[in-house]
Amino acid sequence: MTIDASRGAEAPPDLVQLLTPEGERVEHPDYDIDLTPEEVRSLYRDLVLVRRIDLEAVALQRQGELGIWASLLGQEAAQIGSGRALTDADMAFPTYREHGVAWCRDVDPVKLLGLFRGVNHGGWDPKEHNFHLYTIVIGSQTLHAVGYAMGIQRDDANAATIVYFGDGATSQGDVNESFIWASVFNAPIVFFCQNNQWAISEPLEKQTRIPLYRRASGFGFPGIRVDGNDVFACLAVTRKALEAARTGQGPTLVEAFTYRMGAHTTTDDPTRYRVASELEAWKLKDPIERVKAYLFKNEHADQAFFDSVAAEADQLGADLRRRCLAMPDPGPLAIFDHVYSEPHALMEQERAQFAAYLEGFRA
Image 1 (cartoon, rainbow, N blue to C red):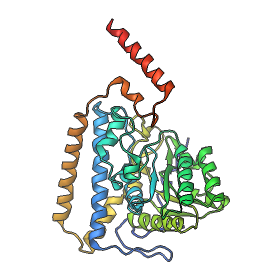
Image 2 (image 1 turned 60 degrees about the vertical axis):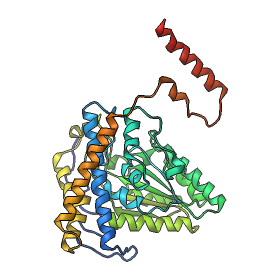
Image 3 (image 1 turned 135 degrees about the horizontal axis):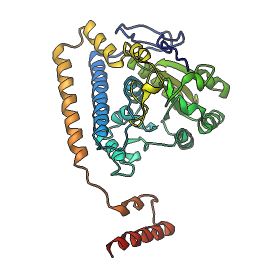
């Protein structure tokens, strides 16, 4: 197999970008955003802390403390930008990699680790955070999200839904069915595709013959491609798409053009199917470094600020590790506790059968 080492390294001409990889602010005729220095510093802090959470989780998995981990390395801007565009009333439906969006929705990161450690069965209350549980089945959350959006529509609520998925999921039937339903019913939803170039080991060119955002036109709603490593652009584009959804203009497909810097999960070895030069080309587009460059160039932050964020990140990593290792193992029957909201006869029967099976080991 021949791999183009520069594939994806050049920005496509139809890319919405407000902050270049060199940290230069640029304008766009359809998307603009006015951020105060304090707001930019806050976005930088989000990016750094979320990356630190991710790196600590990878280390914990490598040391046998987590069963598996899906890294977001390189995709922080897509997640923080879109996550910060949400209002308290909006509902987010993630895959299993949206740790940055979880951060924006105030989900304690240790609850994410609990799921991958196998000591909780979901980890957080979706209603409390307006952030649904992680979904492992590829693409199925898009149908759940459309259903929720149609509920918002019928309740006449001033809210919207956003659903996350990867480029590989666009080949799933569930995703395409959700596009149909959302379009026909004009559902208030934003489909947010993080195109990180690789569906595990399958490159983007094996998923589509056209840019992913252009698929939306075939279903009857707009699609936009945004620089997924530009937190300013991701915020501006997602904010506008969500507002369109809330005001009855229907769905939008946002394709965040980014790159998965790490492995698909910690069970994967990306060196088997992609070349190092491709990775090096994308390192020059790092989402954190471009915001740091912008802050420096415009004298909106000094070295003391960057040092304080780095120190906070180290403290967060240490605290996350400590709390992860301290999490107790659940009892074996706990898996039956929250399957249904009310008592369920078959579930109670299965619980009793499993309890009797476990009791047999004590005989």
